[in-house]
Length: 367
Image 1 (cartoon, helix red, strand yellow):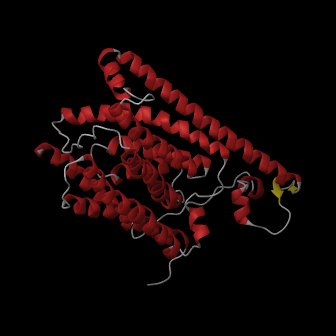
Image 2 (cartoon, rainbow, N blue to C red):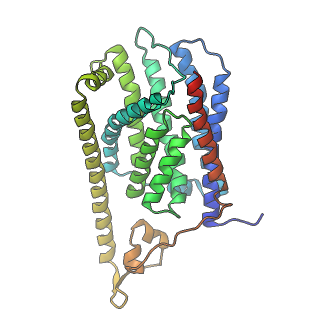
Image 3 (cartoon, rainbow, N blue to C red):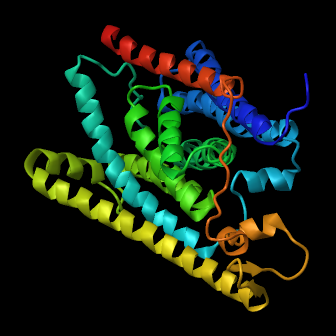
């Protein structure tokens, strides 16, 4: 086979990475299904660990990393940079409270989606064992690692890392957000999760594209999942902080729906405010960097563009986001048009995810 270059190789690498995630979920679910548990909460966590550790570390992180490194012919540093792991900026920490706002909004979306499924006759086929009578910190820590920490890093590396960096070569912001939303929703291969995870995936993609870093999506993902775990335990063991959270939400839904709607509106407003603030701080930093560079540069009055001093470096120009200043106001980066062959693995991953998601919906009618 002739050697592949650039975008064609990256598209096939992205497809292989998605296939790794999709097939990995299927393989681990089959394995876990046939492994007996003792029916206790500890046994349930052990089963979750059997699924999560290989799925996250191997199929969502390890294999995609190797694909983008070796098949994409990159160094480790280049692979991390391609996946959005660049320099960490302090204002990325605003994604932590943003994750809490997203968690609140996710509760409403998830509840509405579950009720819609129930109206069609769907019944959830799974139920978790009751938690132990006494609080166990080890169980909480295990849940945080498997449900919050690992997905935040591994799933973001796969979905908002190399895959998003690849499809942005073809699509604009809207196209990338839609693609990542649909892909992330189907990627979970569970009809109960598909809708709100699609919205989450689209939001994380937007954040990654606008901030040009995967760190905010990782932090937002971690906080969102951490809140889910923490409030489950807080509600079960009546923690001083967070105890009775879900029961309060249920009570408000039954008696004060208007107040609950106001809370969702406030969470949405806070989320938009935090995103705007991060974008503002980033833009302020970009402008400051451009100003420093322009001070030491010349200006081509005829073509109305900045002429940088020293050796011409396209990567430096891109990192400074000075393409229009250097190449001219009419500059527009050429979009890559992948062939059907380039998209084969992406399509295969999408079709497989869709079929397994539909299967989880149909299975719910026979529970």
